[in-house]
Each structure stands twice: as structure tokens, then as C-alpha cells.
Image (cartoon, rainbow, N blue to C red; front, side, top):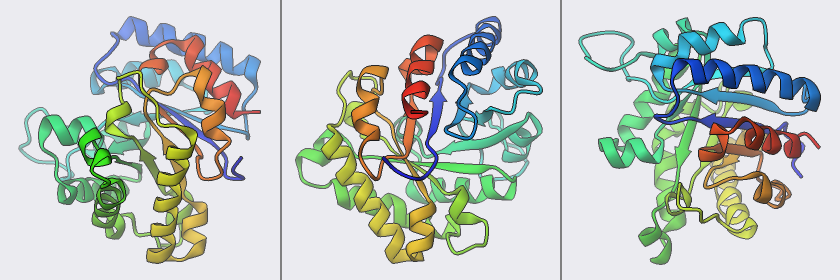
Length: 261
């Protein structure tokens, strides 16, 4: 298991209403008191934008859980109807934000260049960008996994500023094989390790061993309490970006508990 402190981040996507979010926070707080994960695993939850203020209020004074956004606009403000800026996310209490999730890339046509601009915007706002990378099933079956991951990572390297004094500790990358998101299929531990090792090597080539060793690489793709232990045993897997299982506080706490061991 890695010596980097694991991070377990929930991506709620377009789920839950305000009352459900507040109830979830209550269960999560009680569960974390029992698990006692402090200093052993970091926890974050990324609800949809309308839920952020209520979630932040429910988390008041409870620093064990970081609030995150699911997306942001690359500009700091302006005439962008329906969008949310990094400054607005930070003002809501967010500490991190997803950049380039596969659903944004597929459903909204986000390019590698746009994702890089979003990473830059997150950093300007004082947020930790969680860069999401991953290949489709067709790309994997064609042997293109590393080509896709390399292209997506290279496009964002400059925006990540890996040689900056504070950048290495804040570098968060999620490998989310698109073919395993919401499908019930999960990459084998060996497949996850291979992809994460490739990303770590790419980071080392670009920014040196210190930055590469400090970066936390998360796996995202139908993660559940039942399969997370074997994945976390891989030396390059530093935690999880959790989708469906994060909607159930018991399942989410189960994943956190396994990462805290």
C-alpha cells in the first residue's frame, strides 16, 4: 500500500436534494467519528452546485470532510449563463474541484485544451484541481490506453505547474476508465496499477521524481467496499473517486474504513 495518505472523494453527479444532502452529512459525521480516520485518510464530497451552500452549512466546524465542486468555468467571472466560477466555488467553501470528468468530456464536448484552462482556473481560485483521465472501451480494446492517458495528461501538465513549490502535494489525478463508470465493471487491480504506473512515470519524466512521488493518483470506476481493498493494495493507487457507491453513506463509509486501515 502507498505511503501517500489516501483520498476518498465522492462524486454525486446529478443526485440528491437539499434535505437528502443534509441527512447524508449527519450520517457521514457520525460514521467518521466511529471510524476515526483523522490523519490516515482524506475525505471529500462533490455535490452538484445547488447543494453546495447547504452542504457547507451542514459541515460547519467539521474539517475532516472537504467540500468539492464537480466543474467550473475557465473564466473567473463574466457573461456565462448557467456556469460556475472557481471563485464562486471557493466562496461556498470548496477546497477542490473536478476537472475533465469523462461525462463532461463526452456530454459537453470538453477538449483537453479546455480542461487545461479549467485546471488553471481552479488554481487561481485557490482550489485543488482533481484532473480526471480515462479511456473508452474502444480505445482500450484498440490498445490505445496509454496514448489516451498520455495525451490527456500532457495537455494539463503546464496548468498543473508541477514544478511549483506547493504543486506536488496538491496534485490530484483520477484515472477513471470510461468503460467501468456506472457499468458495474471494474478494472482489475493489475489494470489499475498498470495505468497508474504509466501516469506516475509520465509525471516523473515531466517534472522529476519529487513531484511524481507526491502526486496522489485515484482510481474511479464502479468502486465499492467489496473491491476497493485489492485496488488499494496496488502501490500506485492512492485512493478513489467514488460515484454510485458514494450516494449510500454506509457504502461510502465502508470504502473510507478500508482505506484507513
